[in-house]
Image (tube, rainbow, N blue to C red; front, side, top):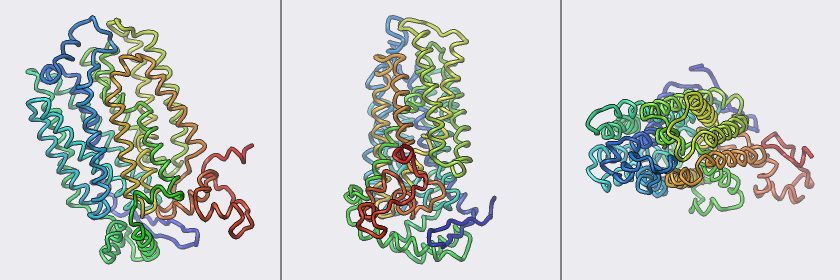
Length: 529
């Protein structure tokens, strides 16, 4: 496939030539290491918070609760301070993303990734050397700033630099790195938990320096995107980079479209205010709703606290960490499925299939726990324990090829250039806000709702699947600067928010009020009825 010619056809018949060049692949791989750092942070916190040495030093009250049998199994780890250790990272990322929106627009995607790398390195150093809870939380806050900057810049970088035909696959490299980071963290936790002396948690937190260094070095060597260079007035450099990454001399049609998109973007003085305009409402609603839904699948509840969750269910410490390694491996392998199929089958098919799989697996988990795990049960029989792990893996695999990568891909490719940085900022902010909510609340929810927490998440999966069926348009193989014309104006519901299309349907434009034919962007209930 390397070196093959790829074209994206405009409605006017103009073709954008683009080869899959080595520089594009290398740049995307290096940029996607931002996901590696994010994933490692997600995975490492759950393992560390189940280590006796860590709990004894920073959360002695929780440590004492784990040693006695009088408490409910579901409530041993219910502690707001312990949850704050995990969730503070995401609260900091939420605030940082607003600053990242400015740097992404004014300094470029590449420099924003470099800033993220620096934040990561400082945060890792503080966490690994932490002597008290304050030092630990400050380190997590700095890591959160890195997450905010990285999650703002990396998906935009990947969407803009990739050729249209493989944009989905290359963008999912970010999510693949997230899953590899989680797996790496689970493996590290499994090893460091065996270290005698109770200092293994320091090594777990310190090894986050590896992905942090990779991201920092990657940001130094990659080139910025043509979209970003043109947006900042560097037209000749933008043309040179576009020619280099597309591997062809015939880049004028794409270059002219980028220049025109940049001109329109410069007319927008207040991008955040512009996001609220009627014509930008569909992209904004989809971006926000996808982030909320992504968190309410329950995936981060499982990934943050997998070792804690498995210990709650009666697994011994070794077994709980081992089980979380298995789920981490399934997570990584299943993301590869998405890379292969996202530009072949499309976004909607993957989301709808996964919705059915996630719904059924969470129902089964809830029923199994309701029957077999009580407040005082000490152990789960081997057969039931294996069944729980299999169902968790079934759930994780379906998420990994659907809501995991597509929750980031779809918002990053649907906003027009004039609101893209602001839109991505709102996307990241919403994601981190609800990640914070789930991280801060999950252990308390587990304590009070017990096994019913899985019924709670399965109900959300049902709601989001219905929403995808009716409201989410297909963006497969659509050039990123043509989303408005070829996606939103063709969708059975969202086209009414497009100003000129709205007039058209009311008989104020050419066509005497005739309705455009639906191109299959979403399930149209009116046409079916």
